[in-house]
Amino acid sequence: MKINKQLKQNKEKGFTLIEILVVIGIIGILATVVLVAVNPNRQFKQARDSQRVANVNTILNALGQNIADHQGSLFCDGSIMPLATSSYFIRSGPGSFDIATCLTPDYIPKLPYDPKKEGAHYTDEDDYDTGYQLRVGEDGRLSVVARSEINVGEEIIVTR
Image 1 (tube, one colour):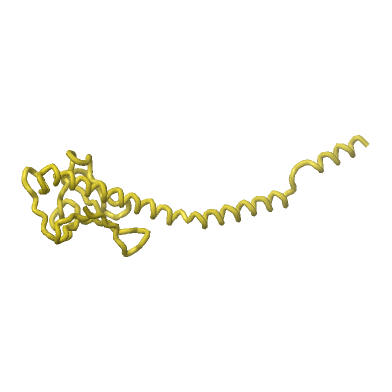
Image 2 (image 1 turned 60 degrees about the vertical axis):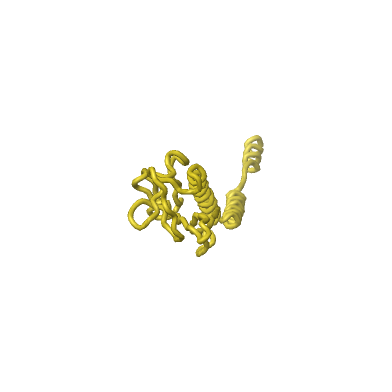
């Protein structure tokens, strides 16, 4: 009799394999639903676009400070740098607008660069590619432009 009671008590404790599998299945379904709802890829793209907005503001603020300090002219390497109405890539090298020496280290410690664009980097004042553009309008206003990742084909433009 005593042995039968012990066996009966042991059978009543714990979860069955089926109960455990059902709970694991429910957790898996809930995790999938949450993952689809959150959409981490879109969240990362939005975060990178937010970083781009911060970066173009940083560059434009530094340019504005330089121009304000030099009575309305961009001062670079000991001389005034003319700004013709055009669009320039902000990077070192030929065919670009090399502004690193105008802004670093007096206005910003280093030039920010696009968080995802291939080739975008900042090593020093002689080796960088921000992945952004500087546009000078006919009215002389400056704009710094980045490509949006979340809205493909659209631009992030900050003008002052």
